[in-house]
Image (cartoon, rainbow, N blue to C red; front, side, top):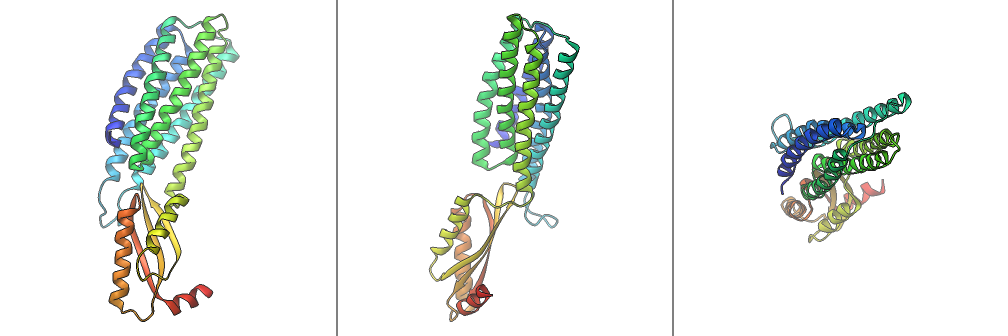
Length: 291
């Protein structure tokens, strides 16, 4: 399934889950499930933003955005993370108020069924969405996937609280709500950290850097590679590197080597958007490196 397809699926499922949790929370008398319904409501907003971010990120480069619009994807992921922070804090504070006021209630059987159903559905969504996000290298879709996984933990906490509360310990229902808030907050901070790294033009992992080096060195005529710099532009990478060639080569021959390297990098390295190759003659390059 494509990144857009998983986002539309997530949006549809979250709308259904929001209605189901709201109904189950009120009728079943579970504050933990009502708290979880708020999470689903914000998931609907997050899915909408992710869908918009994906569409904007696919726009081609223009005169105002020479490297395209890829960071729209990252900004959408940061929006999801911010919503998760707000959700986690709100749910946690609400649970604390219930505990302080001792406004406990014993949830009914409907709340148990809804919480269990949510766990199954969200785990399936997590796996499908993460697979699509990793395939497309989309921060927004990956963030959406981990939002689903946070929902699994949250609903599991709600389910535990509901079952234990039904056993005669109603205080554990708001305690489960507090646990939900903390789990969501923890995941949100992690998502924000990862996507700020992308937004700041963070380099790819060591394996990708190694692949760029090896691909460049394989080209005939390359004597040395150095000063390799790679930055992220949304879901893609732009490389900037220097190569050393025989100083007796013509400008045309040096240009051909650089062209072959660029073509190899774009074809052989995942998510490579562009590569700038600086060609320097062996003696001049060696003197610069020594400085």
